[in-house]
Every structure is written in structure tokens, then in C-alpha cells.
Length: 162
Image (cartoon, rainbow, N blue to C red; front, side, top):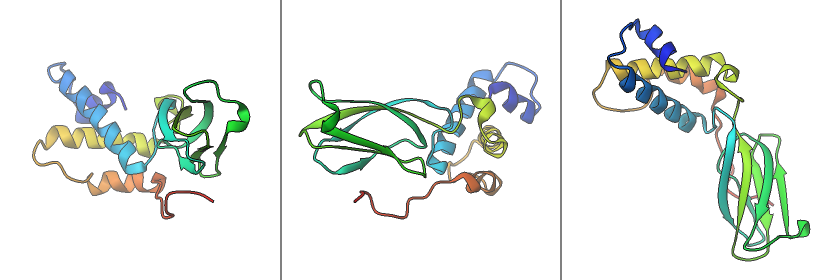
């Protein structure tokens, strides 16, 4: 999922369009993450959730660790609960009022080498498609969607948790 991989797929040897292709690879990666409902590369995420006593699902997935929960001041460990369910969804509950800031790590792989081959190939193919067809933007081509579909996370249940 690099510039070099995209250029090799496109059979380009010059550096003339490197900036454009690098941008298209980044766009293809973002579109892939949106399609899959998952971050590809693990990284730290910080988000703010309501501290209203209800469980709140964290936005990025798959969650591998919830590293901190912080409020306006120091929160005792009894002021919140965290959970990572078997599907890799992260959940936080706090009843201190206001909001809490949650920091966690989420993503499929530590680096590009750990991303499933079909997913990575789909990113390269989409970047190439965007380079060759600079017309209207629409859903990913069917060949790309077919590569990604087995890894797609769908949420069928309503938001929230008992």
C-alpha cells in the first residue's frame, strides 16, 4: 500500500506523477477503512464521550487496548468501566457527569506488512483505478469491493449496550 507498489501495478517508472499517486494511495486507504469499518494500521485514538452512566461504543475498531480514561480531574478507577468485546468493539461507561476523554489503540495490523494481502491489493487497485479514471467518484469498483468484502464489519444492532 505504498507509492512504489502502486507505481509497479501501474507500470510507471518515472517520478512525474509521484505526488498525485501518493495522494491517491492515501485516499484509497481512507476509502478502504470507511468501507471496512476498521482502521488498517494500529495507532492511538483519542475521543470524548458523554459521562452519563450509559455504555458508549468507541468509534475506531478493532480496539486492541484502552489505555486511559480522563475527566476534568483525576478519576478514581471506580468512576468508570471499560470493555473490549469479542468483536473488537471498545466500550466505555462513566457516570461522573460531563464528558471523559478516552485514549485507546485500534487497528488491524502494526504496519503495512500485517494488513491482509487482499485488503492491501484492493487499496493498490483502487489507487490505480483513481489514477486511470479521473472522472466521477463513486463506490469502489466491484473487483476492489470483492477483495475487501470478507473483512467488512457491519453493525446490525442498535447503538448502546445493556
